[in-house]
Length: 359
Image (cartoon, rainbow, N blue to C red; front, side):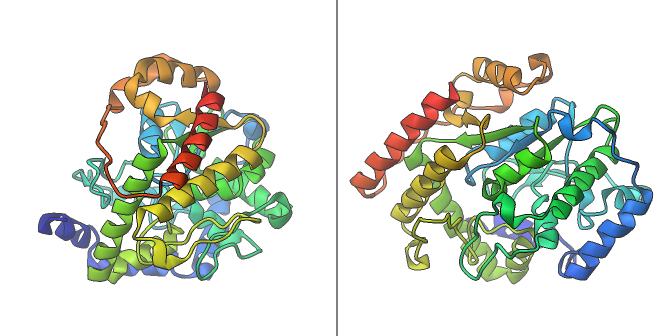
Protein backbone atom coordinates (compact mmCIF):
# COMPACT_ATOMS: atom_id res chain seq x y z
CA UNK A 1 0.00 0.00 0.00
CA UNK A 2 1.47 3.33 -1.04
CA UNK A 3 1.93 6.26 1.31
CA UNK A 4 -0.54 8.46 -0.56
CA UNK A 5 -3.25 5.81 -0.13
CA UNK A 6 -2.64 5.69 3.62
CA UNK A 7 -2.72 9.46 3.80
CA UNK A 8 -6.08 9.68 2.00
CA UNK A 9 -7.67 7.52 4.68
CA UNK A 10 -6.23 9.62 7.49
CA UNK A 11 -7.30 12.89 5.94
CA UNK A 12 -10.85 11.84 5.07
CA UNK A 13 -12.18 12.96 8.46
CA UNK A 14 -11.05 16.07 10.30
CA UNK A 15 -10.78 16.20 14.09
CA UNK A 16 -14.21 17.84 14.22
CA UNK A 17 -15.69 15.18 11.93
CA UNK A 18 -14.28 12.47 14.16
CA UNK A 19 -15.72 14.08 17.27
CA UNK A 20 -19.17 14.39 15.68
CA UNK A 21 -19.08 10.78 14.52
CA UNK A 22 -18.04 9.65 18.00
CA UNK A 23 -20.95 11.54 19.58
CA UNK A 24 -23.54 10.42 17.02
CA UNK A 25 -22.47 6.81 16.50
CA UNK A 26 -20.62 5.86 19.67
CA UNK A 27 -23.62 6.26 21.98
CA UNK A 28 -26.58 3.90 21.87
CA UNK A 29 -28.70 6.50 23.67
CA UNK A 30 -27.91 9.21 21.11
CA UNK A 31 -28.68 6.90 18.19
CA UNK A 32 -31.99 5.82 19.68
CA UNK A 33 -32.95 9.38 20.60
CA UNK A 34 -32.14 10.64 17.11
CA UNK A 35 -34.52 8.03 15.66
CA UNK A 36 -37.29 9.11 18.02
CA UNK A 37 -36.84 12.81 17.30
CA UNK A 38 -36.79 12.14 13.57
CA UNK A 39 -40.24 10.59 13.92
CA UNK A 40 -41.61 14.02 14.80
CA UNK A 41 -40.70 15.48 11.40
CA UNK A 42 -41.05 12.42 9.15
CA UNK A 43 -44.18 11.90 7.01
CA UNK A 44 -46.59 9.02 7.61
CA UNK A 45 -45.90 5.66 6.03
CA UNK A 46 -47.98 5.12 2.86
CA UNK A 47 -50.45 2.23 3.07
CA UNK A 48 -48.79 0.29 0.24
CA UNK A 49 -45.22 0.89 1.41
CA UNK A 50 -44.45 -2.58 2.79
CA UNK A 51 -45.69 -4.28 -0.39
CA UNK A 52 -43.51 -2.27 -2.77
CA UNK A 53 -40.64 -4.00 -4.53
CA UNK A 54 -37.78 -2.64 -2.49
CA UNK A 55 -34.33 -4.15 -3.14
CA UNK A 56 -31.88 -5.50 -0.56
CA UNK A 57 -28.38 -6.40 -1.77
CA UNK A 58 -26.49 -8.63 0.63
CA UNK A 59 -23.70 -11.17 0.53
CA UNK A 60 -20.17 -11.96 1.51
CA UNK A 61 -17.90 -8.92 1.24
CA UNK A 62 -16.03 -8.54 -2.08
CA UNK A 63 -18.79 -10.39 -3.96
CA UNK A 64 -19.76 -7.34 -6.03
CA UNK A 65 -22.34 -5.90 -3.66
CA UNK A 66 -20.94 -2.35 -3.87
CA UNK A 67 -20.80 -2.11 -7.65
CA UNK A 68 -24.26 -3.69 -7.92
CA UNK A 69 -25.58 -1.12 -5.45
CA UNK A 70 -24.09 1.71 -7.51
CA UNK A 71 -25.49 0.35 -10.75
CA UNK A 72 -29.01 0.09 -9.35
CA UNK A 73 -28.80 3.46 -7.62
CA UNK A 74 -27.66 4.99 -10.90
CA UNK A 75 -31.05 4.11 -12.37
CA UNK A 76 -32.50 6.96 -10.29
CA UNK A 77 -35.42 4.70 -9.42
CA UNK A 78 -34.43 4.13 -5.79
CA UNK A 79 -33.67 5.96 -2.57
CA UNK A 80 -30.83 4.78 -0.37
CA UNK A 81 -28.38 5.90 2.30
CA UNK A 82 -25.40 7.98 1.17
CA UNK A 83 -22.48 9.65 2.91
CA UNK A 84 -24.66 12.76 3.28
CA UNK A 85 -26.75 10.87 5.86
CA UNK A 86 -23.74 10.42 8.11
CA UNK A 87 -23.38 10.52 11.02
CA UNK A 88 -27.08 10.81 11.99
CA UNK A 89 -28.16 7.87 9.87
CA UNK A 90 -31.19 7.10 12.03
CA UNK A 91 -32.54 10.64 11.61
CA UNK A 92 -32.43 11.08 7.83
CA UNK A 93 -35.27 13.61 7.56
CA UNK A 94 -34.01 15.74 10.43
CA UNK A 95 -30.36 15.63 9.39
CA UNK A 96 -31.11 16.29 5.71
CA UNK A 97 -33.03 19.42 6.67
CA UNK A 98 -30.51 20.60 9.26
CA UNK A 99 -27.44 20.04 7.08
CA UNK A 100 -28.84 21.42 3.83
CA UNK A 101 -27.58 24.95 4.49
CA UNK A 102 -23.95 23.90 4.79
CA UNK A 103 -23.83 21.02 2.30
CA UNK A 104 -20.93 21.13 -0.12
CA UNK A 105 -20.14 19.14 -3.23
CA UNK A 106 -17.40 16.76 -2.25
CA UNK A 107 -14.41 15.84 -4.37
CA UNK A 108 -14.45 12.15 -5.22
CA UNK A 109 -11.59 10.03 -3.94
CA UNK A 110 -10.75 6.34 -3.94
CA UNK A 111 -12.28 4.42 -1.06
CA UNK A 112 -10.10 2.73 1.54
CA UNK A 113 -10.34 -0.67 -0.18
CA UNK A 114 -7.97 0.51 -2.92
CA UNK A 115 -10.15 -1.11 -5.58
CA UNK A 116 -10.65 1.92 -7.82
CA UNK A 117 -14.18 2.74 -6.66
CA UNK A 118 -14.57 6.48 -6.05
CA UNK A 119 -16.62 7.95 -3.21
CA UNK A 120 -18.05 11.39 -2.47
CA UNK A 121 -20.89 12.72 -0.32
CA UNK A 122 -23.55 11.45 -2.74
CA UNK A 123 -22.17 7.93 -3.04
CA UNK A 124 -24.53 5.22 -1.72
CA UNK A 125 -23.04 3.18 1.09
CA UNK A 126 -23.78 0.43 3.61
CA UNK A 127 -24.92 2.33 6.71
CA UNK A 128 -28.13 0.39 7.40
CA UNK A 129 -26.51 -1.89 9.99
CA UNK A 130 -26.53 1.02 12.46
CA UNK A 131 -30.28 0.45 12.78
CA UNK A 132 -29.87 -3.20 13.79
CA UNK A 133 -27.03 -2.43 16.20
CA UNK A 134 -29.32 0.08 17.90
CA UNK A 135 -32.65 -1.76 18.05
CA UNK A 136 -31.90 -5.49 18.11
CA UNK A 137 -33.01 -6.67 21.55
CA UNK A 138 -30.99 -9.88 21.43
CA UNK A 139 -27.23 -9.30 20.99
CA UNK A 140 -25.88 -10.83 17.79
CA UNK A 141 -22.37 -9.35 17.79
CA UNK A 142 -20.01 -11.15 20.16
CA UNK A 143 -16.32 -10.77 20.85
CA UNK A 144 -15.36 -12.93 17.89
CA UNK A 145 -18.42 -13.64 15.70
CA UNK A 146 -21.70 -12.42 14.21
CA UNK A 147 -24.69 -14.69 14.83
CA UNK A 148 -27.85 -15.15 12.75
CA UNK A 149 -31.01 -13.27 13.67
CA UNK A 150 -33.94 -15.56 13.05
CA UNK A 151 -37.48 -14.24 13.12
CA UNK A 152 -37.76 -15.38 16.74
CA UNK A 153 -34.78 -13.16 17.60
CA UNK A 154 -36.28 -9.95 16.20
CA UNK A 155 -39.35 -8.49 17.87
CA UNK A 156 -42.41 -7.27 16.00
CA UNK A 157 -41.72 -3.82 17.40
CA UNK A 158 -38.22 -3.84 15.90
CA UNK A 159 -39.57 -4.82 12.48
CA UNK A 160 -42.11 -1.99 12.70
CA UNK A 161 -39.31 0.41 13.57
CA UNK A 162 -37.35 -0.87 10.58
CA UNK A 163 -40.26 -0.24 8.22
CA UNK A 164 -40.48 3.29 9.61
CA UNK A 165 -36.73 3.74 9.15
CA UNK A 166 -36.87 2.60 5.50
CA UNK A 167 -39.83 4.91 4.90
CA UNK A 168 -37.85 7.79 6.39
CA UNK A 169 -34.92 7.16 4.06
CA UNK A 170 -37.21 7.15 1.04
CA UNK A 171 -39.07 10.28 2.13
CA UNK A 172 -35.94 12.39 2.62
CA UNK A 173 -34.57 11.60 -0.84
CA UNK A 174 -35.58 12.82 -4.28
CA UNK A 175 -37.84 9.82 -4.75
CA UNK A 176 -41.49 10.52 -3.89
CA UNK A 177 -42.63 8.82 -0.72
CA UNK A 178 -45.85 8.00 -2.56
CA UNK A 179 -44.09 5.82 -5.13
CA UNK A 180 -40.44 5.52 -4.05
CA UNK A 181 -38.57 2.26 -3.62
CA UNK A 182 -35.79 1.61 -1.12
CA UNK A 183 -32.41 0.20 -2.08
CA UNK A 184 -30.06 -1.28 0.49
CA UNK A 185 -26.60 -2.79 0.51
CA UNK A 186 -25.76 -4.47 3.79
CA UNK A 187 -23.60 -7.58 3.86
CA UNK A 188 -24.74 -8.36 7.41
CA UNK A 189 -28.30 -8.82 6.16
CA UNK A 190 -27.37 -12.42 5.32
CA UNK A 191 -27.94 -12.89 9.06
CA UNK A 192 -31.59 -11.82 8.81
CA UNK A 193 -32.95 -12.42 5.30
CA UNK A 194 -36.10 -14.05 6.69
CA UNK A 195 -36.79 -10.95 8.80
CA UNK A 196 -36.42 -8.73 5.75
CA UNK A 197 -38.87 -10.93 3.88
CA UNK A 198 -41.31 -10.70 6.80
CA UNK A 199 -41.03 -6.90 6.91
CA UNK A 200 -41.27 -6.45 3.13
CA UNK A 201 -42.91 -9.52 1.54
CA UNK A 202 -42.55 -8.21 -2.03
CA UNK A 203 -38.92 -7.10 -1.73
CA UNK A 204 -36.14 -8.49 -3.92
CA UNK A 205 -33.33 -10.09 -1.93
CA UNK A 206 -30.18 -10.09 -4.09
CA UNK A 207 -27.19 -12.24 -3.09
CA UNK A 208 -24.17 -11.85 -5.41
CA UNK A 209 -21.44 -14.49 -5.55
CA UNK A 210 -18.06 -14.91 -7.28
CA UNK A 211 -15.73 -17.75 -8.18
CA UNK A 212 -14.45 -18.96 -4.80
CA UNK A 213 -10.67 -18.82 -5.25
CA UNK A 214 -10.65 -15.30 -6.68
CA UNK A 215 -13.14 -14.22 -4.03
CA UNK A 216 -11.08 -15.71 -1.21
CA UNK A 217 -7.95 -14.02 -2.58
CA UNK A 218 -9.75 -10.66 -2.63
CA UNK A 219 -10.90 -11.13 0.98
CA UNK A 220 -7.38 -12.03 2.08
CA UNK A 221 -5.92 -8.93 0.42
CA UNK A 222 -8.48 -6.72 2.18
CA UNK A 223 -7.78 -8.44 5.49
CA UNK A 224 -4.11 -7.54 5.10
CA UNK A 225 -4.87 -4.04 3.85
CA UNK A 226 -7.31 -3.01 6.56
CA UNK A 227 -5.21 -4.55 9.33
CA UNK A 228 -2.34 -2.33 8.22
CA UNK A 229 -4.55 0.76 7.94
CA UNK A 230 -6.06 0.17 11.38
CA UNK A 231 -2.65 -0.37 12.95
CA UNK A 232 -1.64 3.06 11.66
CA UNK A 233 -4.91 4.83 12.50
CA UNK A 234 -7.03 3.25 15.28
CA UNK A 235 -9.91 5.60 14.41
CA UNK A 236 -10.55 3.53 11.26
CA UNK A 237 -11.06 0.47 13.47
CA UNK A 238 -13.40 2.40 15.76
CA UNK A 239 -15.33 3.76 12.79
CA UNK A 240 -15.87 0.30 11.30
CA UNK A 241 -17.01 -1.04 14.67
CA UNK A 242 -19.60 1.77 14.94
CA UNK A 243 -20.95 0.84 11.52
CA UNK A 244 -21.03 -2.88 12.28
CA UNK A 245 -18.47 -3.59 9.56
CA UNK A 246 -16.45 -6.60 10.64
CA UNK A 247 -15.71 -8.05 7.22
CA UNK A 248 -11.94 -7.71 7.57
CA UNK A 249 -9.26 -5.95 9.61
CA UNK A 250 -8.12 -6.17 13.21
CA UNK A 251 -11.68 -6.77 14.44
CA UNK A 252 -12.76 -9.19 11.74
CA UNK A 253 -15.70 -11.29 12.91
CA UNK A 254 -17.04 -14.13 10.76
CA UNK A 255 -20.69 -15.03 10.40
CA UNK A 256 -21.13 -17.98 12.73
CA UNK A 257 -24.14 -19.89 11.50
CA UNK A 258 -25.68 -22.38 13.88
CA UNK A 259 -24.46 -25.92 13.48
CA UNK A 260 -21.26 -24.81 11.78
CA UNK A 261 -17.85 -24.51 13.43
CA UNK A 262 -16.58 -20.97 13.95
CA UNK A 263 -13.18 -20.02 12.64
CA UNK A 264 -9.96 -19.50 14.55
CA UNK A 265 -8.63 -16.00 14.13
CA UNK A 266 -5.07 -17.31 13.87
CA UNK A 267 -5.91 -18.56 10.37
CA UNK A 268 -7.29 -15.35 8.89
CA UNK A 269 -4.08 -14.35 7.11
CA UNK A 270 -4.08 -17.51 5.02
CA UNK A 271 -6.28 -18.04 1.98
CA UNK A 272 -7.60 -21.38 3.29
CA UNK A 273 -9.40 -19.50 6.08
CA UNK A 274 -11.26 -17.47 3.47
CA UNK A 275 -12.00 -20.48 1.26
CA UNK A 276 -13.49 -22.33 4.23
CA UNK A 277 -15.42 -19.21 5.18
CA UNK A 278 -16.73 -18.85 1.61
CA UNK A 279 -18.02 -22.42 1.73
CA UNK A 280 -19.69 -21.90 5.12
CA UNK A 281 -21.49 -18.71 4.10
CA UNK A 282 -22.77 -19.85 0.73
CA UNK A 283 -23.77 -23.32 1.93
CA UNK A 284 -25.85 -21.62 4.59
CA UNK A 285 -27.41 -19.26 2.05
CA UNK A 286 -28.25 -22.13 -0.27
CA UNK A 287 -30.04 -23.95 2.56
CA UNK A 288 -31.61 -21.13 4.56
CA UNK A 289 -32.36 -18.23 2.22
CA UNK A 290 -36.08 -17.35 1.95
CA UNK A 291 -37.97 -18.49 -1.09
CA UNK A 292 -37.49 -16.07 -3.95
CA UNK A 293 -33.96 -15.01 -3.01
CA UNK A 294 -32.13 -14.02 -6.20
CA UNK A 295 -28.56 -15.27 -6.50
CA UNK A 296 -26.56 -12.99 -8.79
CA UNK A 297 -23.53 -14.32 -10.68
CA UNK A 298 -21.12 -11.39 -10.45
CA UNK A 299 -18.63 -13.00 -12.85
CA UNK A 300 -21.40 -13.27 -15.46
CA UNK A 301 -22.28 -9.60 -14.91
CA UNK A 302 -18.67 -8.76 -15.73
CA UNK A 303 -18.43 -11.11 -18.74
CA UNK A 304 -21.76 -10.26 -20.33
CA UNK A 305 -23.13 -7.21 -18.51
CA UNK A 306 -25.84 -6.28 -20.96
CA UNK A 307 -27.62 -9.63 -21.05
CA UNK A 308 -27.01 -10.43 -17.37
CA UNK A 309 -28.24 -7.02 -16.27
CA UNK A 310 -31.26 -7.21 -18.55
CA UNK A 311 -32.21 -10.51 -16.94
CA UNK A 312 -31.75 -9.09 -13.44
CA UNK A 313 -33.80 -6.00 -14.27
CA UNK A 314 -36.72 -8.22 -15.24
CA UNK A 315 -36.52 -10.08 -11.92
CA UNK A 316 -36.66 -6.90 -9.83
CA UNK A 317 -39.27 -5.06 -11.91
CA UNK A 318 -36.91 -2.40 -13.23
CA UNK A 319 -36.68 -0.94 -16.74
CA UNK A 320 -33.34 -2.04 -18.21
CA UNK A 321 -33.10 1.30 -20.04
CA UNK A 322 -32.37 2.95 -16.68
CA UNK A 323 -29.27 0.80 -16.09
CA UNK A 324 -25.71 1.24 -17.31
CA UNK A 325 -23.97 -2.08 -18.10
CA UNK A 326 -20.67 -0.24 -18.60
CA UNK A 327 -20.10 -0.05 -14.82
CA UNK A 328 -19.21 -3.74 -14.87
CA UNK A 329 -15.77 -4.54 -16.28
CA UNK A 330 -14.29 -7.94 -16.95
CA UNK A 331 -11.13 -7.95 -14.83
CA UNK A 332 -9.98 -11.52 -15.06
CA UNK A 333 -6.80 -11.83 -13.00
CA UNK A 334 -4.63 -14.86 -12.49
CA UNK A 335 -5.01 -16.25 -9.00
CA UNK A 336 -1.98 -18.45 -8.38
CA UNK A 337 -1.75 -18.86 -4.63
CA UNK A 338 -1.07 -21.86 -2.41
CA UNK A 339 -4.34 -23.31 -1.18
CA UNK A 340 -5.92 -26.55 -0.01
CA UNK A 341 -7.07 -28.39 -3.14
CA UNK A 342 -9.78 -30.30 -1.29
CA UNK A 343 -11.21 -27.04 0.06
CA UNK A 344 -11.27 -25.52 -3.40
CA UNK A 345 -12.94 -28.61 -4.86
CA UNK A 346 -15.67 -28.37 -2.21
CA UNK A 347 -16.09 -24.65 -2.87
CA UNK A 348 -16.41 -25.21 -6.61
CA UNK A 349 -19.25 -27.68 -6.05
CA UNK A 350 -21.09 -25.03 -4.03
CA UNK A 351 -20.34 -22.50 -6.78
CA UNK A 352 -21.91 -24.81 -9.38
CA UNK A 353 -25.12 -24.92 -7.32
CA UNK A 354 -25.16 -21.12 -7.12
CA UNK A 355 -24.69 -20.78 -10.87
CA UNK A 356 -27.63 -23.13 -11.51
CA UNK A 357 -29.89 -21.13 -9.20
CA UNK A 358 -28.84 -17.81 -10.72
CA UNK A 359 -29.93 -18.76 -14.24
